[in-house]
Length: 69
Image 1 (tube, one colour):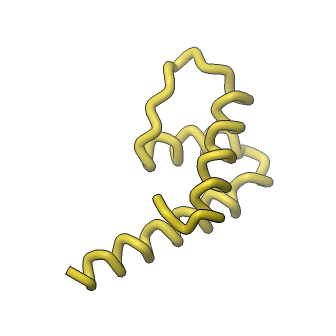
Image 2 (image 1 turned 180 degrees about the vertical axis):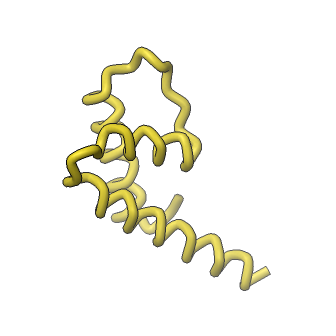
């Protein structure tokens, strides 16, 4: 059981690092959309990309500082 939790924690940390690495890139909107879907946040297709970006950023920062997913 502990190994499963450790694996989940490592996967979350890796995904968190990927998200922060992608934020300043040129094609971040498409990549962020992909990551939003990958971590299971479902937003309507017509949602403004700025809103999607802000929601993801808030989600990541919240969980980064809280240490939870």
